[in-house]
Image 1 (cartoon, rainbow, N blue to C red):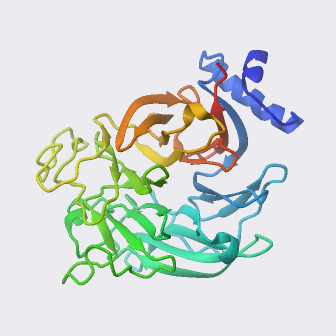
Image 2 (image 1 turned 60 degrees about the horizontal axis):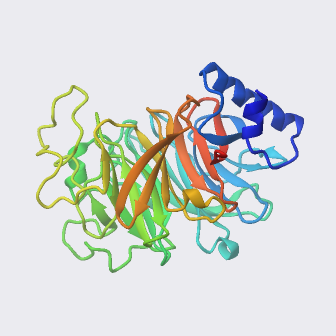
Length: 386
């Protein structure tokens, strides 16, 4: 037990509450017949009901956390969790739907704008992904004047494949990854917003240089298409490109680079198969003419979720690595990135036994993770001491 505590690398004064969190973590590891995890882990918060995403507020203001049930919370190191922040839109919290991603506007210091993606229902009982923003009040207790600027139409989901991951590029454009609502052929239909990446301006308008602007019968918001269920998106700081990943069906999870006008193949090209074990009737194989191949894929699906590039000097051994959560395989995946080449797959938190939903790199250089459980946790991770 003491060895695990010493290896935990706690740099702050060990309060009774913090000691209890570390002791709980150590007990989990010992029950898994492991002395220590392959990374230093501190449990910052537990009792989160299926958290989905997080965003770091400036300075010491803490972290915003979304819960799938529709709550937006703020966590601070000494104060813990706030009550629910008011002004969040009503969400369709069924199946995989609910309150999804949260990102701060690039000009948050001036605008205080917080962006949310969420599942939104209609009178027919079906739902789609919606995106909007509100101004975080000075006392951080409410979102003011929340405005929905994007709605996935038509609404086709009965509870599956919303996507919802968001990222801003270096020029301030917003990218939103949209699931195909479990309607696989809609991903190839450019008149629909299922299975697409859309690109908007910083205030939610359609940029006039989007690749399909002006084409009859095509939604002008679309940046790329042929996506099944994207669960992670991030700006690659080394190449200034938007990277994303998506769930395959039974196998075929993949990492892609969101390029203008590209078709990423679902369901024409996939390395996965139907849950019955048979290929989908539309599928021509793992590759197909006119389809952009992934930069990396898994034939056995980890059920990937969350994405963060490590670009900090705090832990140089992690620089140029990409972190991705695994829901089904309950691990934090670490990959080496060189240009557009991805290699050297490693697994962290393999003994922790929880679904990894979200991963972000904090301004302090630590990696922060949310676990997707009814008693979900916020974890702070650093490399294991050699």
